[in-house]
Structures are given as structure tokens and as C-alpha cells.
Image 1: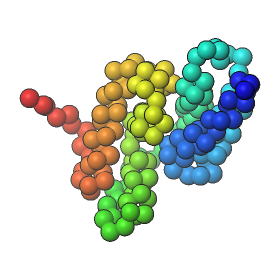
Image 2 (image 1 turned 30 degrees about the vertical axis):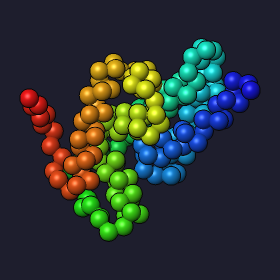
Image 3 (image 1 turned 60 degrees about the horizontal axis):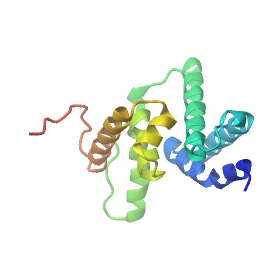
Image 4 (image 1 turned 135 degrees about the vertical axis):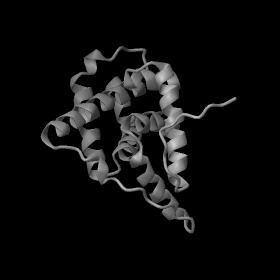
Length: 166
């Protein structure tokens, strides 16, 4: 299988990650398309023998960061516009929808790490490489994301305070 053909095999994973990251199908498809375009244009930068999947997620991360920066320059972001949703307990479909909404409530840095490690099954090292951050930062962001997501799903206030464990 050619290297470029291998890229095609990762499209479903890229779409799943983009969808979970952005929460909108159309925006996720746009991100995947932009990622594939950038990856194919920069394919000569990929080092044969390294993990193509991690490289593609790195490209997607960089494209996403560039898009967010571009939007911030054009539109002021209002963080106060977000409201805490209550947890639905009577239907699994509602719980899934709530989980998707609560994922969107996480800070993007935490959401990226959580999705790469939990959803895409990247190792801490692969996630660190994809995001361009130290492995310790991956672990702390993942821990904070899990705590915050659990609190949001239980309808509790998501505090930013760290707990002291004895």
C-alpha cells in the first residue's frame, strides 16, 4: 500500500476526532478536508518509518489552532455565553447527547488531549508529539479533563481547584 493510500485509511479516525473536537458535523468535515489538503501538500515532510497516524493528528491540531486564531482575530469570543446543561438520566441517547455537549464545555486544551488518548487511543507520548507539548502536560490535562467532565456529567459545578490527596 502506498503512503498516500495509507492516509485514506485514517480518514474515519480524523473525522471522528474532528467531530468530537468541534461538535458540528459540517465544521468537522471542513477541518478534515483542510487537514488532508495540508497533509498532502506537506507530505514530503513526513518521515517514513514514523507513525503516520500521529503525524496526521499533528497536522489536524495545527490546522485547528490556526483556524481558531484566525477566528479570534475576526470575532470576539464570549466565554460567558456558555451555560451548564443538566444531566439527562432517563435515556442512553440523551446521555450520549449530553456527553457531546459536556465535551464542548471543556477547555480546548483538555478536550484535545482527552479525545486523542481516550477516543483515538494514542499513547501519552503520541499525544504529546501530536500536540507539541511535554508528556507531563498531557497527563495533567487528561486528569483535569476527566475530573471536569465527570463533574459536568453529574451536574456539579466544575471547579478549577486541585484536590490534595494524602
